[in-house]
Length: 156
Ligand SMILES: [Fe+2]
Image (tube, protein in one colour):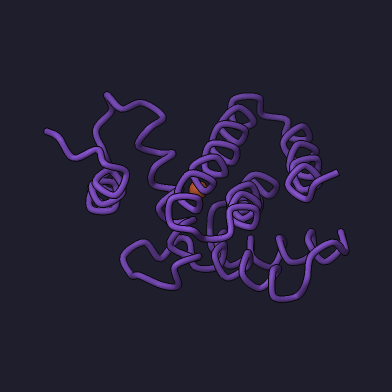
């Protein structure tokens, strides 16, 4: 089984265990939506798409399993490291890359490593594409405009 599908099995199990069906729906949409956006952005920027997809699937895993968003990026990076280490199919530097992206993903106002930026941009893209008729959050406007123009969507 490829490594993305192995992680997806774990993420599915976490989501299926959620009692609140509305929250579970949000979890599926957001985690897999962000992971697809990670694939798109990583392929466009020639970053590691496999690891980016996995970072996307795991990035809010703490929020959905604990139903608590406080410090979720930092706590999520610890949780993701445990999950990935347990699988024994990732090298240490790969786990470090994924966990760094998760740890930093809430710091949207600053620019960090190119791989970290894939996840931040994918998080914003999923929020904005969920319903393009909704207003874009003020904190996400600049990133969303930058990603759109990077993708060649720059007409008014
Ligand atoms: Fe997110």
